[in-house]
Length: 369
Image (cartoon, rainbow, N blue to C red; front, side):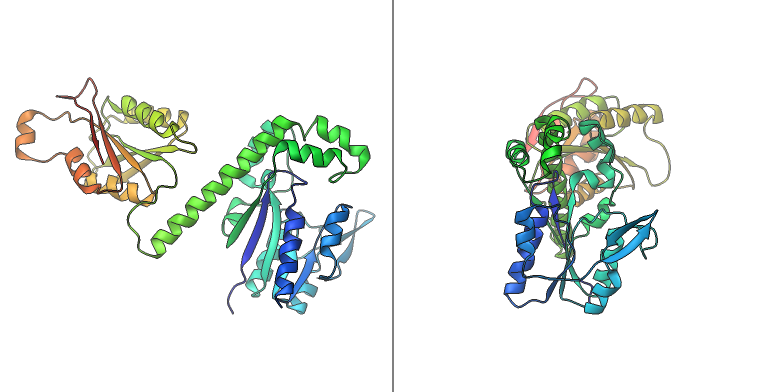
């Protein structure tokens, strides 16, 4: 049985319209003849959301007791028995009441997908596990309900439900998100414009990274070797020499010139295990890369240039930064250096920058496109 497909509506904050869009998509599919049911939907008393759910079949919830109170959860077994083509399941990061088969709703969704049922769900950026600490720094609020990033990244489709901070605050002030007695508190705290702007940017960046992953998968699946330049991604090759810090800072400046740019550093170790660089110097350079927001990679092999080029194509790099040669004139007469090999192998898709530095035997700046 083929596994079902997952579509996730991702938002920056409550109230941007994720559930509304989920229901809208359900209605569109039902209108085309697809068998759609609501497995679980929370309207929070919002009239427009409730109206959007009208006309869609809803699988009754399962009521469960917990600590003297009753809670309504999605009835997973009832949805599985109903076997719709598409199930709408709100709030992917929700934690189920003890006694349910799974601890988290995303685990319920996984079981539906394994049963061949397509699922449309929703999640806010603050509920992604990797961003919990960042969101707490922005808003001062610690999120207790989370979903692993990989669960969302594996979705077949992610829709970013976008809304400016100003528009979201207006929606809040008009009573379209929370009850009237909670509006002033929300606007003064979590829904401050600075918070909403930061969360919106966070959601956009996370979604952009998901697009990069999809592109990489597509290139790999279709055997496409040349990079697709959706953003500047700069790879700096470090020999382990003292010029490394100069190259790292140049790579960082180059990557920072474009929106969403990033940089990586790579050092290729010899395959025979013999060290060609000072471990202390490399550790310092790795620390600098990470301090500047880059990532450090170590590879092993006897073909240094080939390893650098392979990594550049694997990560979809747009530029490679290398240092001008420190080899003597005599060595250059009898063999091609790593830099020359990288330049020749980069093709028309990757720019190579050879940066002069004080340690070079004879420095120059070469831009090869």
